[in-house]
Length: 309
Length: 324
Image 1 (cartoon, rainbow over the protein chains, first blue to last red):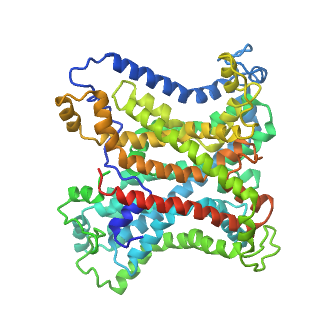
Image 2: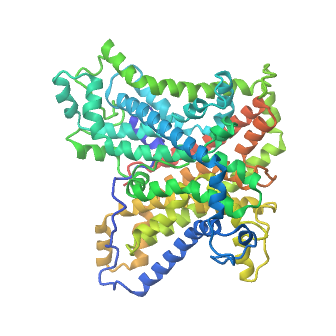
Image 3: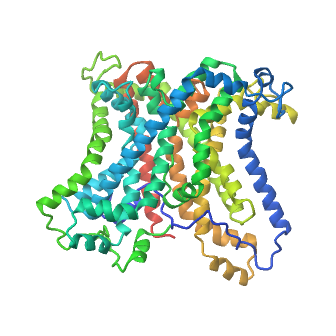
């Protein structure tokens, strides 16, 4: 890897596109003189509708099945409403079970803690890489960026072994701590801090404010949008993480939602409408998050390419 | 793909750095280069928490894994004596490891092309500015936000051989039903179908952003020259999407090589010879067979596989520098 920072920018797996708001509808793509409803546009619309339908169907299918009676679900068929009508039996059965609440709470608070710690330590480190002078800063930064290539799946065995020695297997800390290192975030935030005009900070420093003070009172307020976007992504990633929580947690009461649901899938066997109801419930929080933050999420992916699995 | 330099020079009058000198584009205090002892301390106060976690949960496991792979350590704590390269030589002559690498590479091949192609078609269609923008974005990107567990449950249900929607649709059009997840070789293709549905939305958004970056002027100029829609697509749009396609290809290959979650869950914890990915073999060797030493060795073989693609990526992206 070359030692110039210009090279590191091309070495990292981030996607670097200009911050253009893709959520803006652009209607300039009609050919000059083309009718709004020409044959080409109707064809494009049909193709789009067909693809969207293909992508929506599996989700709709899960929702439809979750509102069927167990008998109707087990008899298959493609009808939207089974012979026995619409029922919330499946949801009642799951919610009566009680574990789902525990798992959802575990997911919620561990994802929140992971997000808080990750964004905090990454912002501090990214600021140091961007602004502060210390020995070996470039090499350390290179090492952090190079670590993006290390697949987390290749570290599960030594990490688990480490957690055994720390006595952290089957604990919340064992679940949380390995998830707080996210090198791509350092990269994204450093790039942002690089673009902040240094004059703003200098003014505060002339007034005698120390580095920390400047960071918290000048830099952080400016970074709110990017920190928000990054937080959404860290949260989604933590919420959906499967492999590590699945390995480190065996105690049913400590499980996160994805892991907990996976254990009952085999236990339920053929309770299809209940399995689907669980899938819908597990997806619900993220659907809500997406509907609220659609703009930021879409922009975040478009501008940073961050969030790939 | 705009260079950072460009965005920075927009933020302030800044000499853009040239490679070879200190091109970090950093602007520090005038005392830069003579970092005071106090300055060093302050910097490490900022860096400390992250670096501690980085050393503890990335660097140490990396080194510890190499050590483990040279021992016969077991999950139960037994063993742990040094056995040299025995794990590696066993792994390299282990047919199960080779089939799982083969499965992983095959899965990568059959997912990468559709995941690029569908994403491109979706983005091109959405970019025509047809009404219903938020709905298109929602339908294509929503699955990406769902957990692997949810995806797996939905698709296990769709692929159910007796009552699943997939076979219902097949019989509706007069075709023979298929045991999707229970048939050798078909199982991995079924997992690939579910994966394409799940993750294409991410690539779609990257393409959409790249399309919005192409200046309208180019199209207007081409239209004035009498180039039609198709001509514009092939001589302006597709070439302009070259760089982002390279990035998507590489990101996609790296993601597909790491297959585990949905494969493990859709096969309901079991695995067949034709669907076991390499990460699942690491898991089985370590947590089912209790052989931590052996599983570490396989982890490193997997890591080398990823590195090969990563180096390929560096070469590809270096050649695409400075594109917009």
